[in-house]
Image (cartoon, rainbow over the protein chains, first blue to last red):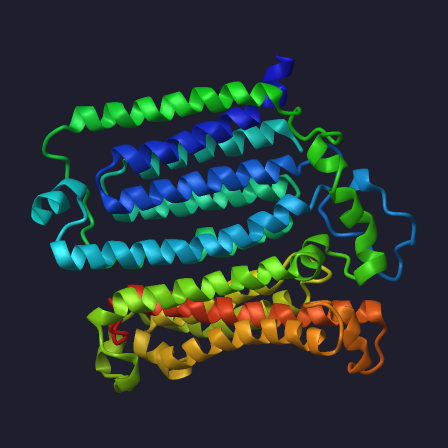
Length: 125
Length: 340
């Protein structure tokens, strides 16, 4: 039970990642492949963010303002901000690559009249 | 961190992911994927990653769902079943997924326990940034100070990547439409009126507040969750809202695609220009503390804070215009005339 509580988060992230991989490999529709890719991406992001989580810590904004006492900052009070920074930019770059992927899929649709992998392969021959 | 809450969100997330992979209707799949993104955003808020959650709420649950809908609108909506070799395909996918999954799960045995404050990631490098952000930069939001100052070089190229993504979308889809050079916004005809007046009135009320909030998010990112990326996406979303509830041409009278292209390169120029200015004044590239000699009434520490605000404005400009450009091109197949 203890190991379950300590590790079940990671197992669910792996499950999400595998749903993404399955979508990318087994689905023949290009849009489904793109959705699978996005799920895979969020699974990795959620894994990174969870590395930064700390029990009993608050959000990574140092307490400040006129009323706040200028006490020494205790590291254990704030979650690890470094994975947040990495993943914040990854999300925005992710929407950029999503746009490119959709543009390529639409371009393929214009050329071959289909989004299904097997039909496109037939028309290629 | 309440594990019951965590578990509930994760379970709902897995259900949404499975549903959006297996639904035959791509429109529903896109909507369910938006719900999945929103669940992820809740999960990150719960883990204390407020900036990441903010970005995901604006990007994943908002803008990328709209991109999916626009792309599905222009292509086929229903997934056709595969003609032959269906079982083989599924088996290969399942085998790959379970194989990699078992390997990854067995690797988790070596991980530190979830949310352990003494894990290696939280003990070696990150304490420096948590304790030194106020003395070195005067910015309380650690994510902003690492993003725009300590790691500013990397963020500059992330901004450039977004710019390049916009260029790629224009060059892939632009050949189906007219050339940008010849573009003149055509007059808005009476076909705009086919949209519901309730939606248009609601949009008219929403958009100014959205843009005001976006500017607040950009400017106040030092003290609260937010910053250039989030504010830029919200600004872009406000233009996309106008384009959806009215017409693409109504939006283009406010922000032409050509001008958006100019703004996006201007944003990258602002970011690298501030870096180059520091270089010209004799400090390192993107070392904002030297700027206190030209900014009035600042110390080297406050100059770093102000320098961050400058680059965040550049990031917001680029992100806003690239979101608009991607939407315009995907929604109109590169023609940038009518839209959905």
